[in-house]
Image (tube, rainbow, N blue to C red; front, side, top):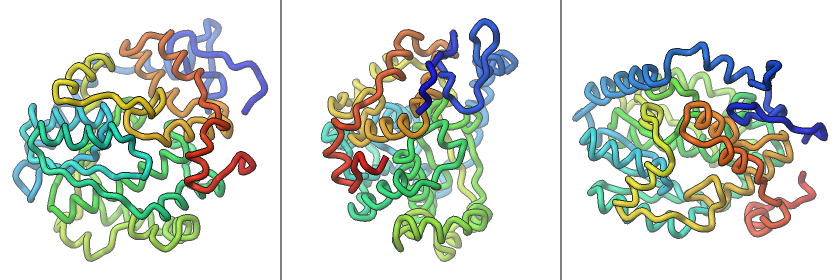
Length: 343
């Protein structure tokens, strides 16, 4: 982490330690300057929503389920599932991947919400030993994250998200579902990713060089969790699925999301830190990322919310300046086999 004093954009709170950032004489960051040249945000969101709705309508009724939903039990994926079921009337299979650190309240939320919405639900837990090795080597060995992903997530979250995304594709193929939905918001993924058409055969070919690296880092089970067998790819004649992220098409403050999902019986977890509503490993990922890179892994997400009027700047600063203490996270570190000496 840099020893230089950290300054923040006068509008969006991105720090001077953020990769590729520059400031003008007024302290406005280059990301805010670029945003000023974009189309009005309401127009952009409407265009994304139109594209998403076209994808939904063209996919409806094609498979056993219309959509596989990556459902963490957190607030954003809960709101996403609610909208897909109640607004778009899709036949959804909600899938929760238990990384071994899902908060008990989040687990309860999964069952409560899926029951309230009347959707089928699958709770899937990868082998704990594999998950521990994945987490341990993601932060100790390094080399897993791309420069772009470092801006958006910690190494722990990046590997977990990659695993979950691949599992959603596998479930979509198994159930012949043409759509996959995530609860990602702006800053977590590029804001134009409300609709992403995946050519799975091409994607597996592109990712082939990663196979040996992932197997070396995460063990022989890496292929099962990060790649897709040709026999499974053949279940989808077109070799394609469409990923949708409905949260990128709406402008909602956190208070509005919470008010909506609490009507389903959703309750906040109290042991997941400031930035997660489902995972008890999240604070460790934040602390390690800050120590390694000098900025909070959620700052891009928070900055985008401030930039577009969905979060107050003072609240945002408080979020990204509060860094969990590694020394207080020893239970999580012990479970994945790392210690302070690893950093």
